[in-house]
Length: 497
Image (cartoon, rainbow, N blue to C red):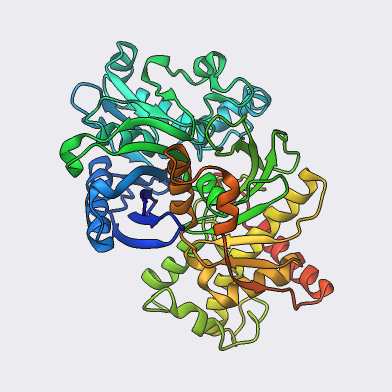
């Protein structure tokens, strides 16, 4: 039997999973790593800690699976997107911590670019909005604020990458500097229509081309691991940003199919096939991951910045629960949130609002509000945000979704999934294998190395665990959404001053 090793490098932890040729998990390991918050709105990671944690969990996953490196047909990588790293080409030393996708330090830079009239150009070329979320302004900040970085970059001494690029660099002892279209399309520097870095955008953001990685297909052998890491060279054959990887792992490979991942944030993607839709509803367009030699395909995406992270906040800061899984029991003690709405805009609001100055707030509190009501409002906020995104997605695509496939840690919460189905009015389908981000990376790597021969085989492997069908009346669902929209409006622009 053939096996594929998947690196799943996320925002708060690094995971590695060994899959067999049936798509079954044979072994996995996970390790959390440090989150750095040097200033309000700033979020950073240590690049070397990311690498060490990912290297170590890969070794542990192989041991847990009882599989040796010689049994691994390929390695696939999926990663937190937009997180921005810059390092010395000579020895791989980072010049600064990684600036995480959640980081808002470049909000004023984005506002200046908007005021100067550049937003339409950026949107037309990249499919993105001018927001601190994306990598371009983060990279510009590094070049401008790390002493000597711009001069060194222009001399070709520095290398930029998102986390996928950093991991490949480390896996190959610095021999290979690459990314794939799914990650490149999240940088504000990649032209969706030409499939390459764009000189006009590079000039706009002040980025020298010499720092950029080569763009290679999401599925295909791009390198081999250094032999000393695993005792033999393993083909690195799949790369995709985490949400496009999850779309692939959910086998949403046809136009009109959609998935939502409930992780640190919430990310809903709709496959749009060969058609790159220019959103009119505050969504963004990106490249979708494709099989080897396939023509470019695209997806619409709505990004919610804070989803599962709000449960962590309830646990770590408010201490209302001891473990994240306890929120379902606490929230289930009451039939509804008692009129309480929670807007988790800790890092601003993402799609479809794109307000970096919004902040978290809770509305509708009364003397009778209990911890259970707060827990339920927190849980419901995840579903409300996703419902906003889906409505925008349906308007952009011009058709109604038939079902929503779900994954991620919070997808295991039955109360949340049922409320999501109630709000959306469509079935919410949870698969047997919920590690779909890693599974997508494994599929891409396995397709490139003969573990699987075509995407049709993958569809046969997908299995549903449970379907949540809507139970709430459409009138009640709309009433709940009206209350949510009022709460969102009151939270907007709070930190604008």
